[in-house]
Image 1 (cartoon, one colour):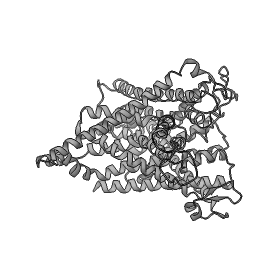
Image 2 (image 1 turned 45 degrees about the horizontal axis):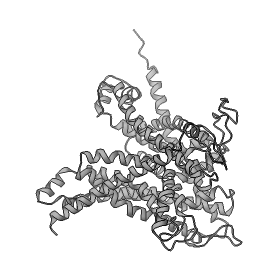
Image 3 (image 1 turned 180 degrees about the vertical axis):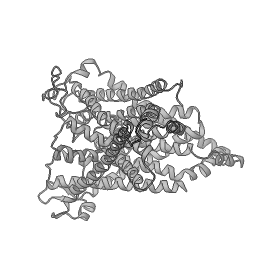
Image 4 (image 1 turned 45 degrees about the vertical axis):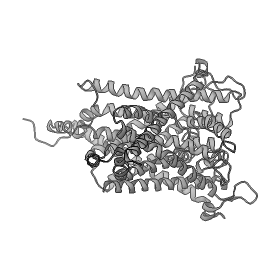
Length: 298
Length: 298
């Protein structure tokens, strides 16, 4: 007879190692996010500590001349530029995406999905520099030849971003439409409604929060996109007066400036403050998505 | 207007825009491949770039991209598996789990340029790793880890519950069930997701500009000692990737054939992403057939 004693078996050790390893992975995630917020925030607020730049100067000042005799760090043109291209891109992309999602789920659910699913996946997979390159070699010359201005500018940036966020909005909207209970649609058809009446009065109102979630996710992506926008927007540090004028976004200024300034200089610190603004906007977008998801559940 | 007429008009508008999106993709791919592939040759893929003269290639950049991808996957996959398995199998619903889920969501919506800046601050400067492959790989880990966690979690959740219960009925430990019962079933989904995320990593540029650097030292492809500074395998050397190279020659390229090189490099990048997409589908199916008794997926 074996003695009845609590022994540490092999599988106990395995279990322990497995749990420890998983805890390590999760702890690492927490460490990453905490250090990320800490480092970017501490660098970002250094502009406002001890210097002459106040938060409102930075956020609402319209003059950006970091290397001038009396340097001024008004980042409003870039903040405005970021919001402008993001909103325009969402305005262009949302109706297109909604049509694609409706096509996949309502018009021709069979081959529509087979056709558009890979298309959406591939559009999502094309790297952002390639979008920038195509924008520079197709959209910019096209705008230059057909419309006033140099071609580069807000309109080109918004068009490139619109194509980039199409897949995000489409896939979220299509998922929402597909998960809609079938009987809602059937009761609408039973009342004699046409397909468009069903879509516009039943399907879209019911799935509206989910569609908005997709749009917000797309806007978050557009707001943070750096290289593709930087390549086509022209990078002038002014508030554009028309859509065909050169402008800048937060990301484009950071992209161009970070390599050419020394760490710790006032110019460099101002760029970090912009990175902090980007980070805070990410929190806002995530918050909005959560809010919409909560509405979607009810 | 009669509802029936409105329905017809709406349907044709939806179909038109859906097909328009397909046309955008076909146009994009056609343009990149048509313009780029004529410039792609064995010589282009293997020779070093030229600063001022025409005829430069993208050999080192292509190698850097692949090497960086491998390094990133070596770091990300085990960490993502650990955290993902925890979220799917061990985490109990509660505040902590909700918090981790929020972290994954925030982390995955950070703009890649912010991830790059964080890498510049912490990895390049603070840890003093400099502009190097290892800095780039760590930054890409931050960029890719939340996606990996999500892929793993979803894959494990999609395994039928009976499989787990059968394991418990046999008296297996939880870790044993995870590794021997659930993992083989979840693996095809994980591999498909990993390959798709690899395509994203391969085309990433904004996170790498300030971590892996924008220059490539002269590489000696006969020197395979990982500690020598001219060896391609040295993880502590700066490494410009293909995507960063496209951005750089578009914004500051001096070679007379810069546009062709950008087109060729874009074609290579897009082709690689296409191959990743096809490979993801193929491997998913293949491994599913190998590990289970069934003939087809789902």
